[in-house]
Length: 274
Ligand code: MF3
Ligand code: CO
Ligand code: CO
Image 1 (spheres, helix red, strand yellow):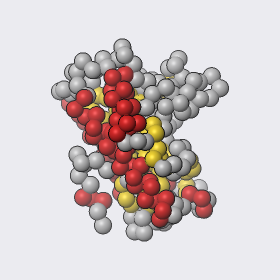
Image 2: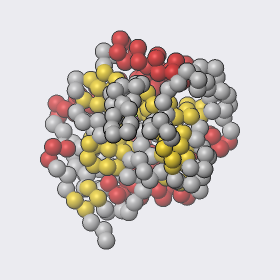
Image 3: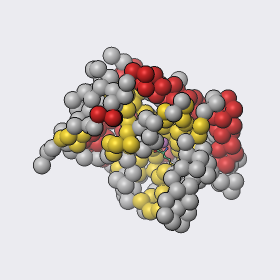
């Protein structure tokens, strides 16, 4: 059964709030751009975390949202400012002194900053040195999957339209879409409604309206979509230990389409220009 539902009014941002979301989004994207030259063989993921921490706190005068976030019964709070997810790690990889990047690794860095009370959340893949054909392809497909989802965003379309576009594309490339983790509404709250599933059916779920802000962040697996949570209660890995890749943007629903709030200079975003 196809059904849709209206967004609660509090999810619609005012022009003032939207301007603050633009600032937070720009800062988050700048972290991913800043760290790029540091991602190379021999560096540890903890060293990358330290560089991002100092940049966010001392240069951007912003707050790293992940630091101290997410304590739950049986799970400690996250103790770092970025998630570093290498190869078969799907998401929420914990930066570590002992995780040294090597040639051919694929790394996702996910960063969220708070500026003036508002969150900007974004992630991207980095290929260390020369990646395999599969490594390059899965990173490309994850980014394109995110863009296919973003392309559906406009007032009157639905959350289900996003998931459908992503799943259809990823499966046509003979990869799979992770089910257990999803995008999310974002603003003064880090993880708000709606849940943005990266799979699903057209014309289902919440109807999008001008002024809504949320992330799209598909995780794409080379093998099965199933994942496993490690004993540290954060690190998520693919069940079959095959590669996984992810991209994330924070988005605004505009009058006639979408604005990407976390754009980077390395992206060609001409297809989203109205
Ligand atoms: N940035 C992640 C997301 O995209 C959340 C990370 S929570 C953390 O929603 F605590 F692991 F950092
Ligand atoms: Co997110
Ligand atoms: Co994120």
